[in-house]
Length: 230
Image (cartoon, rainbow, N blue to C red; front, side, top):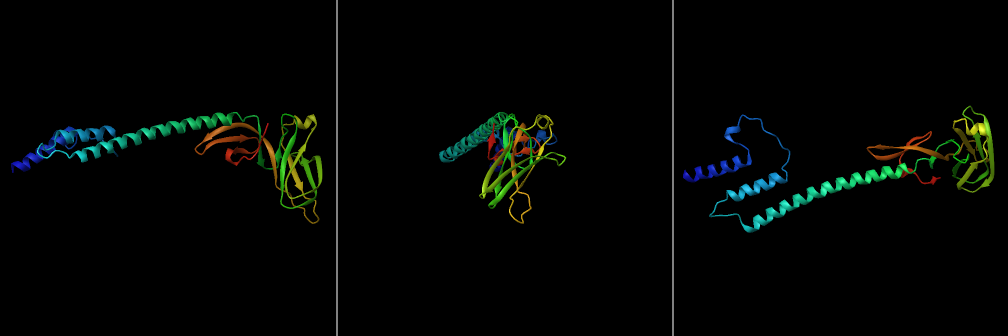
């Protein structure tokens, strides 16, 4: 009985020092923890050493193993904080880098374009097949034909186009220009898919990262951008 009482008393002392299961605090509200922290781990190990059996002390190998475990926990916690800090710095750098692109043009899939700072409307067509008489039509938002480029015979692949020397009233209208492209091949009346250079007017930060705010096209992921233009 004395050995059992001694064991129970030792366990009670350990629990009291750890601040848990104390008879004096049975009815007191207790803080619930999901996991032990560094201080809890160190406190547990220190209490264990203080209440060990002097005739059967903790084995050196076990003690070293516990210390190694404590060092690992400390290192992981420190690494986690470091990675969070690095992540925040990278996020700030992305925002700063994206902000520097404001005022530049980015190539996006679409048929709506506006004149750039030089008063030029430009874009690219990815021809799926040879075009016998590639034709680019520039229209107003009301459907009026403003200009037309006939590029003639073009091989399949990327073909650039542009409209220079726009009239001042079109430059100042602040309305997008609609671009329509046709191969000119016999029996082919379908429109080609166009890509145009659109102005980056701002940036925004989302849960997925930094986004470009592009005129007429909204938010564009920078990873989808393949070409920039001043």
